[in-house]
Length: 303
Image 1 (tube, rainbow, N blue to C red):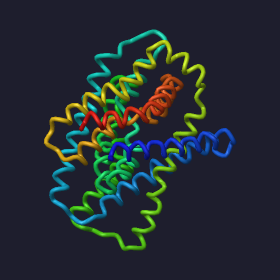
Image 2: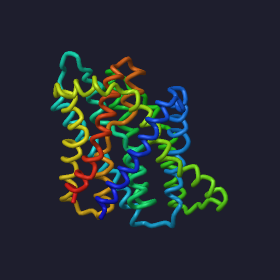
Image 3: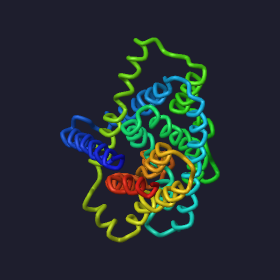
């Protein structure tokens, strides 16, 4: 039942992405609009969703489970880091830093949170949010050291999503409830998260030279990177989850979030640090297409 629900939600997400592709082709959304929508999603809408997910009655057992999921999130990134370093080596014509970054850092915010919300409501959002928080900790430390060796931006760990996590947890623990009218307004904004994120992803995919990408895919290297991100790494983590004494919600959301495709930061940070952002776009788009199969598969492996 859970797998069929996930598959249905993934199909729905891809339909919204298709609308984004059409919007780009018809010049309804151009690159300037895409950048502005990305800022709106990252800095406003997603933090709203995260914060509002904590507006629930206090539950000490849930707080303990959140701690466990946070440890699981760290473990999932460690597994990806180890596998990326073992299996990906320097090869002429391919940007190794972009490959490793793309394998390690997922689209857990854009895809993981909406799927968590669709599956288990606020609980699903909270669990997926802990993966997003872990993402930012690893991204702005280890991730930057991959793209720009020896450097990282510790100050960027402090961002709207992480602030929303901290404020949300405080409100949850001390039971600080928003007035109903304010809560309704913020919830309405947070409801934009999935369609907005998927429209943006569709615009990114619309700019891909599919013919050239398929040729590169046939050479094997790009295909292996995509499989390492979407199947091999999350499958190893999902298999580990089978033997952990955790409940189904924690297991399913953890496996699902770890199996998310390559994140958009692979493109934006590749541009910032002078890496091959076109290659990053290919990895992102092809891993996103593959995720319609790999996310449910990894969830099945987790049991």
